[in-house]
Length: 333
Image 1 (cartoon, rainbow, N blue to C red):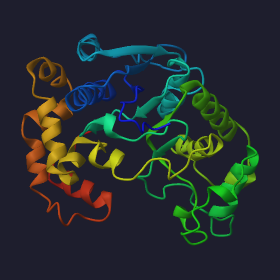
Image 2 (cartoon, rainbow, N blue to C red; image 1 turned 90 degrees about the vertical axis):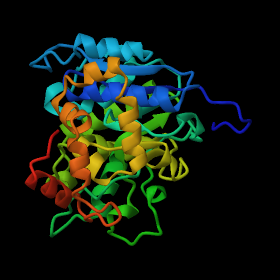
Image 3 (cartoon, rainbow, N blue to C red; image 1 turned 120 degrees about the vertical axis):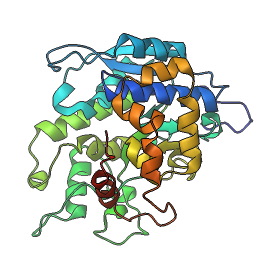
């Protein structure tokens, strides 16, 4: 349950780190946690996929990245990719859960996240899981002749013996995507990673591997994790209202996704957080190994991106932001 006595909750924080962009982002994430939550007493876990048949290349992080993470007090937790791997890298967030400490509350974040305030102030109720509501209606795409949103989602709830009606937001109109439980997988939390992970994996493999007529016209990649995430959360007694608004994806965290997008559309506080935690020489030396960080953060390209936009009147569609950045030659990922 959420703390009501003023005593700080103890829970673990986990991100996935691997060779390339995710490892460098994990360093920034860890630095932002230490900067903004100096009293955090839980474990900071960096889940790392290991070499195996599912990875044509070694997915482990470079040694200087590992050293930087351990210098920030992180523990690197190896896990085996038995079902997904390189063919569906988002599956990392499903398979890594079984490698985390059983029975210990956790919060998972995508690595392209910065903590911008004290995570200990977030009133988590770890008995009621939830996930990010900073999302768009990316899935499903109902075909012209049906089934519609309700038919597609109900088929999934029925498949796993879940009550569909209690998942609906009845304040939203029928056949509008927000009526149906849907999350971004940029963060999620629960009281036990094993209990969460077992359902996540079971549901994901069933949706991927077993034919369902209602899904015949639907793309499962890259959306598989976000298709089954609401089913997992609903099955475990959580929902869209399990975390008060304004904390994660708000004052406490920013899921920036890519560095040019961060500079284009996020608040000045987010940029100041990024530049502050990236400033120490021992961190800077490591982060300069990734070109997008080196050029955007350290060589001033980010400020040039920011100058392209009026942050009070941003384009409504992300694609328009991306196109403007690309037209100026500043896009990097």
